[in-house]
Length: 315
Ligand SMILES: [Zn+2]
Image 1 (tube, rainbow, N blue to C red):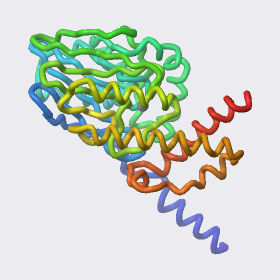
Image 2 (image 1 turned 180 degrees about the vertical axis):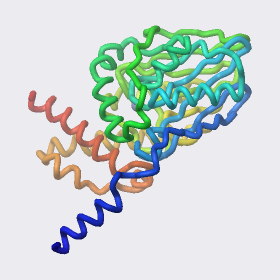
Image 3 (image 1 turned 30 degrees about the vertical axis):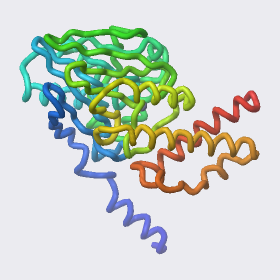
Image 4 (image 1 turned 90 degrees about the vertical axis):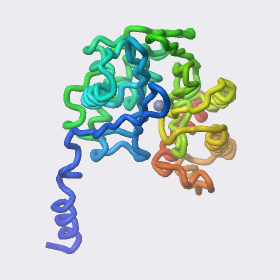
């Protein structure tokens, strides 16, 4: 056996199957009370892996006097099932409503399980076709990232309340508002605002201490939405990813990062750089400190570059 063949053999013995022992299907979800009747299940600031089963997203729930409203359904049917069990440790009230802030897998693949448990599922109307077309592909991609054990039983579930204007839901002595904002992070994002505590669940319109994901985004519109979000009068904001936001600093940091991404992509197209060249860009401080920056920067620049390239050259 040559030396390189031996190395390959050892690598395959030590690392195969990949992450053996991980991915046992337990998400260990523990709701944290962030205010009166408002709970968050904090996701990890990591890429999606076989160890975390896609638990990289913040989900949450709000408890009224007659029902519970859930914000985002998590990545898999098992997550949704374990989320319902976690809710049951806090309250026995029925989960009547699940608001899915947008269609990305970490937020939406638990939909079917909440539907099976009789929850009304809200999503923005603009995502209906996109979700139907891309959902099955995204589910395959998720399975390739986290493995069969975590995704077992997960199906793409259709939302049954497609909305495009502001809605108010009374969950019993408690008014929750659903606010749509279009063409920012995706063609249709929903914000959830609890009037009683002035807590805003912002979905992926706000990433905190983590590199934003932009494949479905329009950055200039997103920047405007961030100005809108600043003015909504919240006391605490739960981002789609990352720790709680209590002042405007994280919003400004996100604006700076999105502006940086757009600038890098636009200038490279103007210079006539190739994608390979622009991917060599050194990520400056403070953006190099963001969680998942290396992989997310590559992904973001690739999608922005391709979009700008096809706009410039019409291909
Ligand atoms: Zn997203």
